[in-house]
Image (cartoon, rainbow, N blue to C red; front, side, top):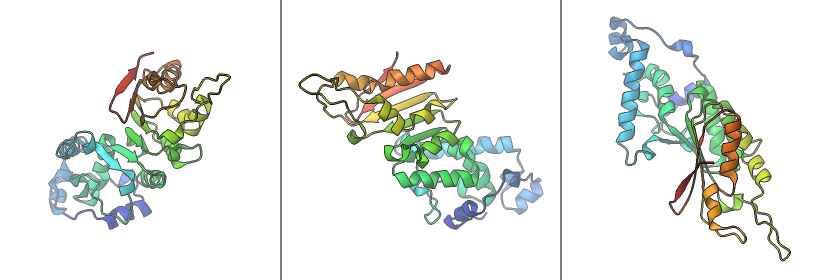
Length: 261
């Protein structure tokens, strides 16, 4: 059996292979190809891929980390260590097991340029519809014209999205001696961080909002429990679209709360 190398992944990216590539093998053909698994029906093969991928994830240190794939690693010139081993057995198994692996993964965009890497790879492999979980560790990639916001649109089967913000991402109305609310400028915040694309998702089940703990004049610590009013606003917007979405707010101190309103 020939393994899949970084060069093979590069070939897939540069010359996408349509889904019609998947063949039906007889036992003799599969044995001659060096992989008798290929003679099984595709549905059974996918169950085997799923079992192998989940076992691989469980072998990693932490159950959540085991599902993480960093978009920065999905580059043609890098080794394909981010792939579960079963995806690297042969070209045929790469094409069949990759969609299963992506469905089980939490894809992490931790730098703005990695959103472009991921978007290009998903387009080349025609796997946008397979993505179920995305984490954005850098809000800079979520601007209206950036690849992060485009990912939220193209990965239309997303079930879980995590948005991690820094203190610099929050702009509050100024407090002064005549008063002032000290409230978050919600309109600017949501327009700058792809909330419109987030609200357009039809299968979303959970949204995690995370930020570091910081002190702002005029803003109580209790404001964190609603993510400065964003969580109930977001839940209400989803509810109007007929969606029951779990909104979880958390910060670097380790606490978290679920918005119930």
